[in-house]
Length: 278
Image (cartoon, rainbow, N blue to C red; front, side, top):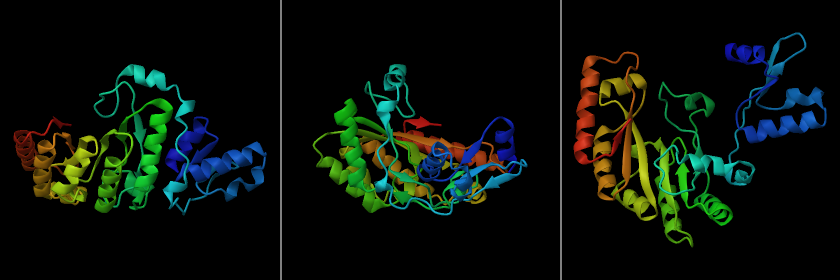
């Protein structure tokens, strides 16, 4: 409510939350038809009533089958302007790239993360076939063969990850793909998954141990297997996947001992050959 008040005070007419493919489409449809009386029926929409009271209709349901969504209309964006910057979320190695979302949400409860509230700790996925169809479409339309995956946790389902890799290996077009927003390292099951990822075109993975301290991980409420991080980091280096590890400094309750354990972990990862610490 506090945030809503700030937005309305600064000129917002509506606030749309949840899966916007539902709420925004219905909102625009009602506004075009000037059907203001039924705005209250739209899930995920908030606005001010005539007496300045805040109205909000919580969106209970999410889109379960993400394959039913259309591909983003990148032809409506000035892509040349973005590409001329020669800059992207992940390391850029071609003149053109585009982001991909292959899943939504995350099942983990990390206390610093907004995804816990926005997705109810639920992970929803697109099928490998649907994702690769989008990649082929973007290659045919724009000549793009470098893709930056911006999922919160792409690799939650190891079977799906392997299927995605196998289908890419058999695909007519050969793509470069990178996990730029990070993924939960333990959800990458084993060395076999890393090998398949590398062979199918993945050459960048970002992971987020956050800290080297098991005690601080408990405070963050983040289940994380530090030993598996070491094991899989060695595999990523072996398969020439450029690897980034992200850490949080200053989480409430962090001690000097926690910081020292983080420093020890960073040194271990550096000796293994991990490429980047953020």
